[in-house]
Image (cartoon, rainbow, N blue to C red):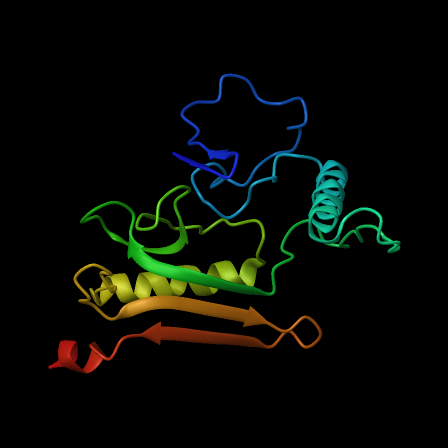
Length: 182
């Protein structure tokens, strides 16, 4: 798709054979959702990959001979349902399709995947996502069409406090809500 400064960006057309690194079960949305890239790779291997990437970024930024002490990558105690904040977008699953609330389809700015079984958030997030989508689909509330700048639903932000379990739900809309109610 792009060639810049000696780097090439390409689009995956087909997977003929999985890598031997891909040993884990994936979320049902894996591959179409743009949320998780390494989910099918074991967590230990993910940590190795992240270690190598971080070391490479530091070496590129400051050089390898700056005498810093690299303390490594710290593993998380949670391998699933580790996100405490998510922002879900409103849109349609495909052009002129039904209302969707979720993550952007991999490689697309416009199309969405309703991620009702997402594995990186806990059940509270999934319940809020499903209830919100059901409510606005039933009310036939339009999402904001970015090109025409028409509609009112923009995105849903959900945050859960790790220590207290309190949940913040933030529905972001346009000012067109009042116009649509008239």
